[in-house]
Image (cartoon, rainbow, N blue to C red; front, side):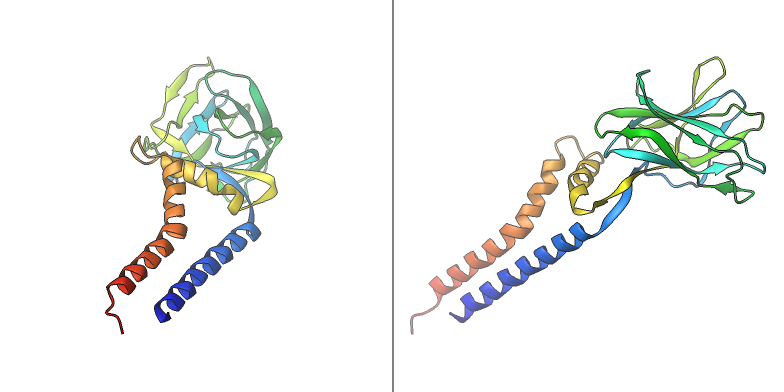
Amino acid sequence: MRRWGAAAAFVAIVAAGALALALTAAADERRLAFTTDVLPTGLAAVIQPGQSACERDVHVEQSFDAVQAYVWAGRPNPRLLVTVARSGGGAVLARGVVPAGFARRVDFSAPSVRLSSSVRSAGFVDVCFRLPGRKAVGLLGHRDTRADPSHAVLVTARGRDRELGTDLRLVFARRQRRSVLSQLPAVFHRAALFRPKPVGAWTFWALLAAVLIGVPALLIRALRSAEADAPAD
């Protein structure tokens, strides 16, 4: 009986811990939707007047209505026109403007642009920054690791793409906060992108279920086996 009491206590502790984690995740609300998963370690694109720098084939993990870029520009800095369109030359979904004079530092700034409309999750988009002014601007990022389909290109004034071999550092956000718990499906889906093909988001759900259900079940089974093997008094 003592063993069964210990097992019940262990199961209760696991359940209480899981409940505490769920409540914490539900209460922790954030505006961050997702990022391009690269650090702004250097110049990923240099935009000349009349050109655009685009991050192609960005997977929209969650809905967003704001985008933040890391911009290198001297003072006074020119404005940038931002467009979000469906990948492959599809329709424009949202627009925004990085205003002139945003730079607070001589080297780089990270302005956040509110878009004209919300971009829904699922699918892929191209995020472009066009320079209509007369002064070159740089966007920070990192070399393309090819861990996902997204990649940076420079669009010339004639509309031709030139591969840069880099990724732009972009941060996508939303005006309304969402709990960490509600973002769990997107987290698992993102993790599955960096695993072998047979592994999907379902794998992480199965592992979570195994921890919450399987561990207590194995403990109870072990106690039953030990009790059956114990010598009778």
